[in-house]
Image (cartoon, rainbow, N blue to C red; front, top):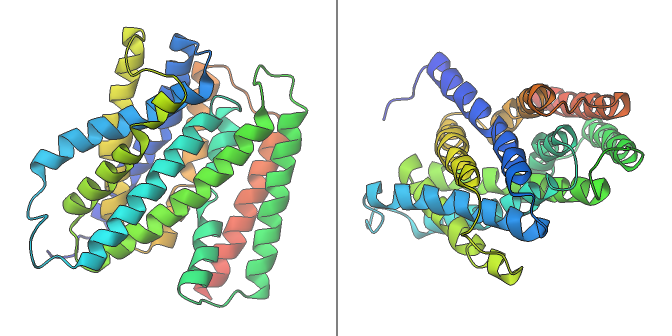
Length: 301
């Protein structure tokens, strides 16, 4: 397959960013309709249902998964990516039950820092003083967001827990990006890769709601509409567009593009839910973005 032009990659990347940015909105809407008593169980239901629908759509259309031309190592990387994706959704979606959309999406999109650190560990890339300074700045931003959330008079029951879960989600998303990029670079096409990764994530997540005494059935019809929108727009369109982009550009650049996610999600949340971020939360978010920008700038020099 010939490499697409930069503008084609850019368009697909923009579509992917918008798709994943809307996920937080569907999740918040589902929570408002269902008003779950068991927040963790309901969040795991949302995460699992999203991936199950995506996997059921993908598996019948996947081709040559048993082909001898596919390297086993590529399949192993895809499976590893799927496990990380499952943990990412389980932690991040749950975080939205405890903290604001702005805080959660800012923290979960700290991917460039984590991808950089993981690349240092995985590829033995040297961490410069500028890299360390950038990570420290981003950490300060995260602390400010945590303090802003802890002092908030909002209705969120445990914003610090939500922030921690969002950060865990960021680390898992970074591993998902690295493993997914590797799987595609050594043999899997995007369709087969996402079929394996999404199906693995669905299998990992499927039993978890039951462990928290939560069913897949019995919710208002609107909940299933939002789950379907998550599966189609955020997963099939959003994540798949980002995964396709990783065949042609670096994982770090894909991570950088995801910095637009909190901007889009926060703007929509401000309109739909009147969630106006506090000054300290905005300050912390800007400091995190500054740290990420410094980190990325030194990688270009």
